[in-house]
Structure formats: structure tokens, C-alpha cells
Image (cartoon, rainbow over all chains, first blue to last red; front, side):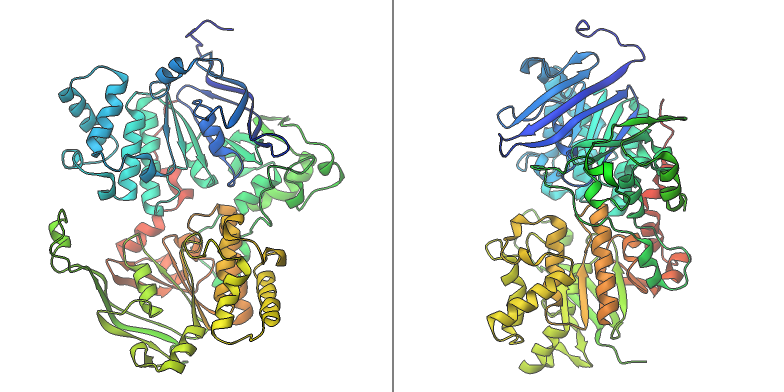
Length: 351
Length: 277
């Protein structure tokens, strides 16, 4: 065990080892996150992508130890700056949350107190971390609101959440998450209920804040495009497992798991030139079916029932998440021969 | 050219001329908000049109006006050349059969205590299309399979379904009366990308098979580009640009169109500040 707060140098800010999160009791046991390992170095951005039910949000809650121990069983290791959060006491965790890890949740409306003014909520978050007079807190809160791009911070200060647009509420949530000056910001689908134009603004804001504050970012989304744009590295989750990991660039250029390749083919692309509009429908390839029932995930590779390339071993043995020879830092869990994979799906990804 | 199936002429809708409510900002008092402002559009049979714009531009209000679910403040909606307000009972029923909607929110648009099957069967019973229960059940099972759902979902309740499945139920229900035009209000919002692709493909396939006209309302130009031939861009209750999709995409003339086109996550990385490493 490293000493508390021991300096880790170039080591990981966050290191997750074989994390398992289970809900319920047998026979209705549901393993939402299954043996997930991740690392995130200081100042870097890691994207976590997958469909609903893949375990992304459970992971987002598990990392800052926000899951109710009465409902979820968490095993494995979550090391933040060398400290194992799963062994930490609640008091210690409370000091870490906000100050070391900030979280931006999905639902901006339900995450804000409906009856408290915006300014008061930001000031409250600031005062939770350090002693500030009311005036100091107010000044800092206004500066923070301005930093997240809310220009008329003065006027906004006295507003209630319902008076703000969805995009503005999301900015307020980001301001609150930044109040403790965290080293790691976890953003769980921060833009999924917003208009595309507003989504782009929020994502640009997150990218900018991360660079200015030299803060690590764990961005969770179902949208591979979003994750790849903002993150250095991407982990693809399917049915509780990480099935592929690579640099964002590499993942878009040359996905190695059939599921990742299918996700890429399902992304809508704007038409810039065409012959017959209807013919473009074929360019959008849906992944057939849905993710498995997590109470009884399929044996072997969990994607095999939906995989067009599945063959005998896929339903028998789970493929390990293995490094690809000659592709540093690219890992994939698939039984297909790498040469066969290249032939099968690197064509569409390059287009 | 065939006469339009559905046409809006100089359509206006003004909401809330409220005066007495406290705490309303000045602009919301008095005259209210003109959500739809002298909007005209026409849909020929079998045609597919995308109505795109940001939240609050009046897209969904336009859909409700076109369906006759809201009464316009001025202007008129015409079905087969006749204003909706002048339709008699029989004509109104024919209109309802011909123009159907897939609502935005699949949670709110299905009765939580009613089985999937009976939700889809309801319009069939109301319009007397399948008079007996057995006929209705057979037709509903056929509809379920045409939207890619298993027939055994018939007796399930909405909360037992995933978001994508619910969206399919909404489409099956809208198809039950064999309409000529389907209005889809934000068909992909709130869905995973992979499921979005399934829903878009399903709409495209159904529209091709049935010669069904589509009016797709969305804020996502990239998504609707897979479905529609023509696009109309809305801002502040008005159509600011309209034309064939390829033309509008290749050379947008209005800044609002350009902004929507620029909202492409795939292009995001180019506009990001350099990250600290």
C-alpha cells in the first residue's frame, strides 16, 4: 500500500483495477460493471463509450464512491493519486469529492435545487471546500460562472434553475463541479438532452476548461464522435466489459472490435454531395438487436449474438482484452484474427 | 405536379397573451409569443421533408398545427385542398387516418397501464378498421413484426420495453391506419446512436415500402439527411431556407442553416483548443 497522498510522479491519477459492481442478490444478481480496468494520467482525457445499459453510468457513480452500499456491491480497486477509495472512510471520501473529483451529471434540471438561486448554489459549493466570507464566495461564484461562459453572471446570480435554458443549466453544473478545483472531472453524458448546436458549445467549453485547468477528464457518452473529439484515449464498453481501448484517433481510423466498427457505421454523417438522397439510407448501418439482459449475459463474447462475424469460439470462451502486436496501446477483446479484422472493417472506417 | 396532400398557408400561432402573471419578463407579457410566424409549406403525396431548427424555433408547434391538434391564430392548414376547419365529420376522420404522428417522447405518449398491443389496436377499433378482436390482434401482430418487434410484446406494458422498442411501438401505432403521411417529431432524440440508426432505417424502409410521405422534425441535420429529399430550416417561427437537401447542404444561404450544419460532432476536434499533455 502506498502511503497516503504519496507522490506518484508520472503515474496514473486514477487507476481502476478489476472493478466489479453488482446490484441485487442472487438469483436476480446483476453485474453492471464487470472486471473493468482503466488508467488516467493527470491532465489527460479518457472517453468511455457504449450503449445504454453498458454500465457507463454505474462506473461514473462508482468511481467517486457515490453508489449506495446498501444497493450496490463494489469490488476491485479504485486508486486516486495512490489512495484506494474503496478502503477510504466516508469522511475522507467527502473531502476527496469535489476537491479531487468533480462530477457533471446527465440531468441538469434534477441535479440543481429548484428553489435555490443559481448564485447561491455555486457559492454553496465553493464554501463547502474552503472558508470564504459571503462576499468572497459571491465574487468567486461570479468569476466561476463567467469562466463557464455565462456572460451576465451578475444577472444570472439571482435566477432560478427553471429560468435558464438547458445549455445554461449544464454550464452551471459544470461551474459547481469546478468549485473545488478537482484534478479529475467526470462528465456523464453532459450533453445528451441538448440541441446539437448547444452540445457543441458545451463540449468546446469542457475541452477548453480541461486544457486551461490541466484537469483530467473522464467523458462518458454513447456518441463515439463526441468522445473521440475531446479525448486522447477511448475505452469502449459493452455489457459491463471494456472490449476495446485505443487512442481516439486510432479507434476512429482502425477499430479492432466488431462492435466498435458497428458503432462507427451507425453514426449519421451529413450529406455533402449525392446522387439520390434515399440511397444514403444504406450508408447508415444499424446494429441489429439490443444489448443483452444483464441478469443473464450471454456466455463467451457478450457481443456474439449480435456480431455478424461470430464463429464457434465466440460463444464458448470470452476473448481477453489483448494488446495488438505492433499497435502500441491498442487493445481489443475479439477472437477474430487481426488480419481478418483489418479486411472486414477497416474499409468502412476509412471512408 | 400532384396537388399537395397537406399544405400550410401563412400559418401563425401566438401563445400566452398573459398579463397578470407575476415575474414574467416584459417581453412575455402582453402580446405573448408568436411561436409560428406566417409559415407556409406544402407536402405532396409520398414526399419526404425535414423540418429542422434549434429548440424553441416552433417545429413542434408547427407539427401540432398541421395535425389539427392546435388551432392556428391566423392562416390555415389544408388537407387535399380543403381547410381543416371546414372538414365535416367524415372528412375529419379521413384526415386523421391519412396523417399520423410519432410523438417525441415515447414515455409520455404511451399509457403506462395499457399493454403495447392494446395501445396499437386502439386506433384500429376507433376507426372501425378491424371490427373483431381477433382481427385486431392479427393486425397488431403484423404491425409489430413490420417494425421489427416480437409478437409476444403484445401483452407487455411500456415500462418493460427499452427506449428503442418504445419508439418502434410509436411507429407501429402511427402506421396502424395505413396513413399517407407520417409526421415524426424528433424521432432520434434520447436514443443511443446505434438505436437511432435502427429507427431511422425503419422509417426509411417503411416509407419506401408503403409510399408513405414523411415530415421529420429534428435538430439533427445529419440524422434527417438519411431520410429526406427536401429540407426546410426554421428559426423564430419562420422558414428561413428551403430546398433539396443536397443543394441546401452544399451551399447553405442562411446563417441558421450554416450553424446547424456546423454542429457536427465529427468536426468538433478541429475547433478545440490545444489540450495540455
